[in-house]
Each structure stands twice: as C-alpha cells, then as structure tokens.
Length: 92
Image (spheres, rainbow, N blue to C red):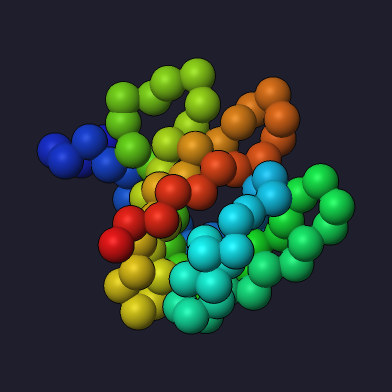
C-alpha cells in the first residue's frame, strides 16, 4: 500500500551485495555499525540490527529504496536487476 509520501512501509534489511566501494564510503558505513566484507568483484554489507528499508515510488526499472540505520544515518539504494547488486548512496 502506497502512502501519501510516495513510500512503502519500512521493512527490516540485514545484508546487501554491492560493487566494490571507495574507502571513504566504507569508513563512513563502519562508523555507523555496518560490517563490509570485500570479495573480489563485490562487497557484502551487513547492517546493524534494526536497520530498515523502504521502497521509494514511483517504481522504475531499478528498484529504489531509503535505508535507515538505527542511529538515524540514511542512504539510498538502487537495486540493479541485471547485475543483481545494490548501489548505495550515502546521505550526510
């Protein structure tokens, strides 16, 4: 059900697969409790317990989400269906 803000209800999120990240992004995410494991051509990001993910509308070819960590830090996610990984954009 879509709300008046164009967002779906938030659901918990635990892990996402991403392409390799720059050091500054990894450092910022670790400061907010994320665990990042690099595995060659991708990374696996594990979020702290209580992290929530909310889909942003309108829907496009790639899914778009707002991720909110328990401490209030936010990032945007774009899920690439072809590559089967998520691009994360940190908000400060």
